[in-house]
Image (cartoon, rainbow, N blue to C red; front, side, top):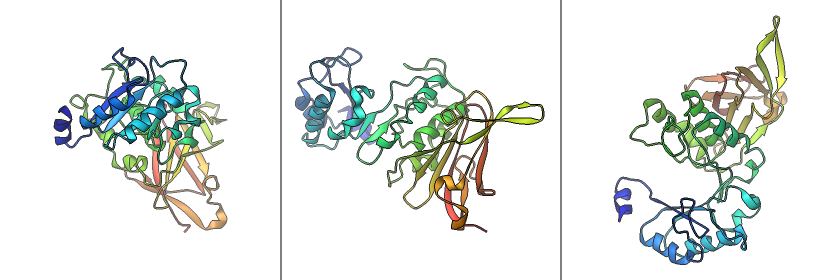
Length: 318
């Protein structure tokens, strides 16, 4: 089998099918053949099944179709990761954990453009709470390194935009599935994809949901005379925080605007009021630089489309 060759390289082998009569590419789907197909996938040595939602019957609800394949995979005799892909339709978040799926697509399809990355990222505000152990929010594959090539290539992105893309997916705990051709990935792309600090945050064993620090204050790069223009960008300038297994915090600053900004938050936003006698020691996951909160505030200068992520330790205030 092809799977034997793939496994010999230390890789997992994935398969694609659909809950309808045909896949999105018009190949045969698994509708009414779920148990037969699941047994076949197991015999082939499949490790991962992406299960799409094209050409599904409108007489049967999605939760029934995904429950059916979930049961088929659970009884096929092989441990296969079940990646449900109904694009969030039919209020997927409310029933997906009942199906046995290990991941669910919480977004539409991604494309290799900044506009697509931004759209998918901002769409997660209302579904972040559904992420967690057993069934993870899947924001679709990574387009890091595509550079405009491939089926969803389109325009491509800058290195800074790819870094923001990878960092946001990691902070949200989304599966990190490489979408580019690794044979053509350049050094910048490989450096992003191999960032161990971000991978550890994404894969943290606590499986904690991320939360957003709301009302973060930012400074526009424009000025009125000598005075900066202050404003509030709760949607396009998110600060994301995740509690990690060892007591650390992952803190991500993101700038989805087209201007440079300074952004900050005070420590009480993460539970460290001045009376606690504690502060944060922050390690930049890209540079390794270690700093501390200043005057109970953590702030960063962000370029347009840029981001900064820290792994933060709670330490004594000195």
